[in-house]
Image 1 (cartoon, rainbow, N blue to C red):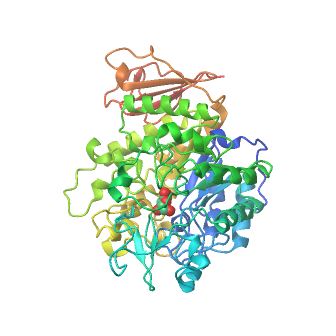
Image 2 (image 1 turned 135 degrees about the vertical axis):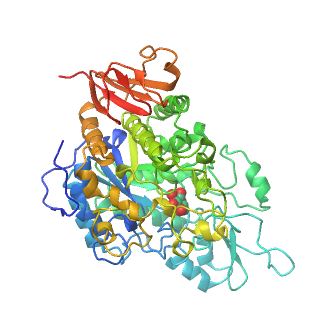
Image 3 (image 1 turned 90 degrees about the vertical axis):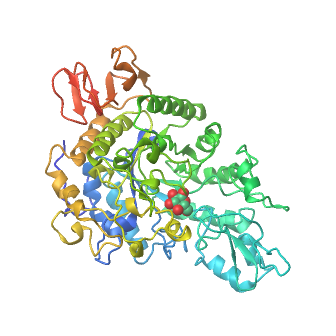
Length: 571
Ligand code: BGC
């Protein structure tokens, strides 16, 4: 195991590692998601920034990740955590400059870490110059054509064009001063773009080239299934929209012709060496995932099934089998995700009763959020059990063929932060639902780096308040402890590199006897890397003599409950 980097260590841009030349590096990569405003704050203003990422390049290299994915760092009024972009080809001045960005890429590339950035093409910020121009230019103007403006209904047009609702709550139409209305699937500060407009198509190609030219290796495409829309009259009602099958002809989502857009993006990706990669955030029916994941489209698509699963052997087995089949049918590799910036952290989800944990497959209904609903009776959270299960699930995930996307702070075993006062919350969901839905702030609280430093070494006073219990999970505390979740992630990620072979696995069904067999998953990767997860709470008899890593301490001849073990032939 490499020496643990200290949180204070700063990046050396002239680092000695270089990037692999493998154009298929992404197929089995571990990608670490950075939510930049909450990662590390270099200038003490309370917002994480680009230099903050650079200052932790050694931490990321020591962790053993292959790539980082940066959530939006672009200029934004932060109506939706940066997913409201005012300028796609710049850095938010509060987060730094383009020079800082170049320096960050050099620092990460110098350590063999690729960089993926988030592209948000479904909507801009209302502060984007195009939208400001559209407001000023008035009804019927060419500038309004880049967005979705309509006249209102009712005798004086004072009612919205339809009864459509925004996914963050409230109406999906907002009226402007001259009386017209514009469509926003998300917050009112996020007007949807009109992807039939040639300017829109051209501008995003320019953006993809801009970041690719700066050395960005890939893109995460936000709401990738939402760009193409059929808004011909008459428009359906919300009930009619909800009832429409997602079969390529839905008026708003996953329309067949969205692929024409990605075909032109693919030309840009493939004009670079190595080709730039992309991963789609596409909430579509499973049979349509290959449309996004195939090499002529975006190339890879998120599989969010584990976000919605209980800690349950049957569910994990089905999800793993189905997604590996789905990925191979499109020539892609599967992705695996247990946590991200939109859902309740998995250590917390697994500590909640099953009925509370799961929620529909929608980004607007973050998984496990019911736990936090204001005004309700809160079910008990079993923190230790949640973390124990999270460690076991993570070790299982990291052993699967395909790429794993991990979210900042999960390597510390962080729980969701519930105790954020209403006046400090930021998620538009909270406000647009009149505080009925709590939103996603609880997984976006700035990271704890040093247990006894001001703001836990994050930088200035954190823009979302850090709870006192963050001290126990600070990077310095966990670095010093062999049994910490951070030490487990470091060992797992480094071992994974040595064990990883072909993108294959098989289930081993005869190693565990009844009555335990239905609560245990045993899979084998090429080369004899065996991975066994005991989903039950009870220890089971198991030969642990070839164990190389376990999510909990072992006792001889027994696999403890809620534990994953990696075994491999010892050379
Ligand atoms: C992102 C969210 C964001 C939304 C609107 C999502 O899918 O992951 O964080 O609020 O897109 O851009």
